[in-house]
Image 1 (cartoon, rainbow, N blue to C red):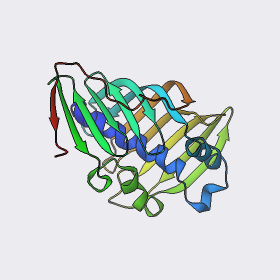
Image 2: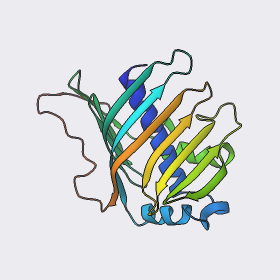
Image 3: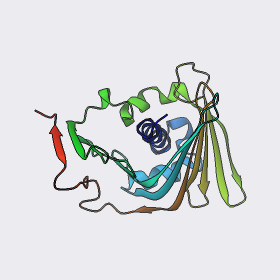
Length: 211
């Protein structure tokens, strides 16, 4: 597994969790901790944190990890790691590859984006169910499970602080690979003007696929 697939897994997992909590379906919308977390995103809050992401291969036990910074809002996200930066702002997708010094810009079409919130939402209520949600000391613990053989993950565990700030997400995929993301310095902040712009060097090659 290379760093590109690792960052892809991270983005997929993060968007699943944040969007699922933000748009939790009515059966859970009035229960804690979902309703309060939903309110944070509905009010325009942006979750910002440093992250450490790790994937352990169930067969080889090989471990691949990545560190970076993440910003996640209701309909947009930005992930910056050592090798790659990704920004989706709802209309445009931009990816900067540090190794190639290249930027790819494309129109954002949720139907063609494996990580798009709308694609996740289309099947989230039939894919995941809440197996557990409880308070453990000063933290909240939530476990989502799925019996769907085509689900991206068969189990996802979410750890939140008492004020509903994500601390850790641990997921197990259909072939028992374990994907764990831990967050430090996490907090909800107000959106800023240039928060979801992609930063890249002036000399980078720019490939614009919007035309």
